[in-house]
Image (cartoon, rainbow, N blue to C red; front, top):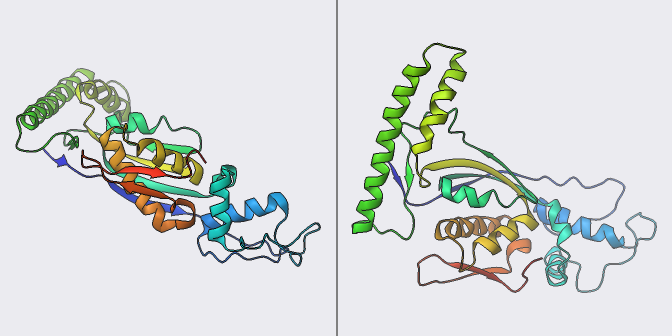
Amino acid sequence: MQIIREPRVTVLARQQFVYPEHINWHSDSDVAGEVVAEFAGRLCYLSFGEDAGLEGGHKSIPGRTSNEAYLGNILRTKHGSVLEHAVWSFLFEGVSRSLTHELIRHRAGMGYSQLSQRYVDESHIAFVLPPEIEEGTPEYEIWLGACELSLDAYQRLLDELTDKVGNDGPATMRKKRARQAARSVLPNSAETKIVATGNARALRHFCEMRGSGSADLEIRRLAGVVLRILQQEAPNIFGDMYFVPSSDGVDIIETQHAKV
């Protein structure tokens, strides 16, 4: 039986910004998410510069010409709507069903596609060790034993249900009928995989909420992994968020620009 101790996060997709040919303006950032957020903000006030080729265009505010400075002002003024145009897609692996039950509560600005236990045979499923449980302790042995029992029950139940369903109906439907019933004995710590797509505003909210000191440790750990990736992807959008060590061993996420 496989035990998973850390999540795995992979960036699947990021944007490409296409400069409008009729607007004479360029950002100093090469990050599409940062550029589209800046462009959207400047469009609100036509602040592309006098030579942009747009009626009503005027010079940018002095001192705010760089993408970093512009988005910094966006964060300070909480003009978060322009951040909704920047989008990333992730693959989350090595996370528990317990975690994804909380993750998918983040609906606004997020989209999900998760592994189906109805269609996938989980006879060799892995289990995610909660960060609170240390190996070599009595509580670990209790947890491990419970996982082993549930997996054994799943495998035996799946065999019985498969025989009971027999050859009645299409093969895919027969497998689904057996697996959807057998999955009922699997615990919240069962490992799952999920694709999550979110805009920058929603991702900031996820990191802020699930990275807080009161958040569940497993999802706080995931939020930390996601934020570290996003800070490399788009430092001008996520660079104001920082990590604070915690006595429970999982860093807390904080920011001076909350609820952008």
